[in-house]
Image 1 (cartoon, rainbow, N blue to C red):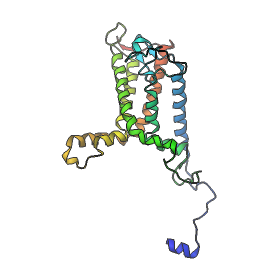
Image 2 (cartoon, rainbow, N blue to C red; image 1 turned 135 degrees about the vertical axis):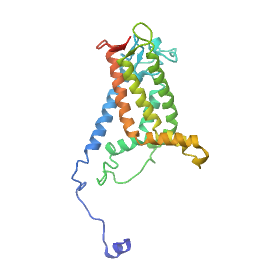
Image 3 (cartoon, rainbow, N blue to C red; image 1 turned 45 degrees about the horizontal axis):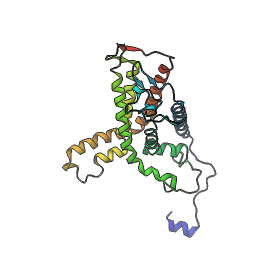
Image 4 (cartoon, one colour; image 1 turned 90 degrees about the horizontal axis):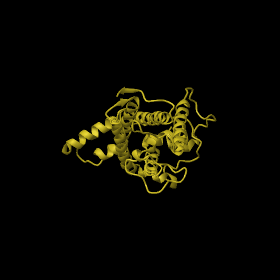
Length: 270
């Protein structure tokens, strides 16, 4: 039936009282997404404001949640760029300059937008499931406007990933006797850095930087090659997103357990 036919006959859309006619477990994905994001937010918030058990001096392990460590209270060896001359007040994160940008980079990420829009804001929760909102506003409201800054937060996140890489590399040269060494903590930190690089480089903004503005790939073979590689990573951006927050929590937990004296590092070499 065409729109004109509907107008002549007075036909209207079918009124379905139920939220959806789907019989599969469409709610499972949103529930797991909400649980995963909530677990990360709760854990990260607790650890950032705990302000303790972030540094293992013996092996130079620094948790990524406190890197770069800038507060006057930071251990001198843990402060890659030095310490600010004043002590931070209680509940102010030691990595004050990096954490807000990392949070904004994650929150404005194209994948995470889809994840929390569907699972938390329910716009929509799933395909063919009625959403609870009466109208669609998109990202036009004032609180949503920072989403457009994702491309700029990418540059800061890239710099911080380089800092995390340096933290990981330096730890290899602080073995038991002060020389080169490898422990389980080193391997955990390496996996975390790889996941962070995977998430950062697979970002849609990174893909756009590589080749988004080119009018001809044929005239820019190097840029095209880089764009192709990033596009391959971009297909797995969701997985890097989840694996990276899991590796962040695992790395932080391992460093915290060592720093608190709960466990000791399993040494593989030296």
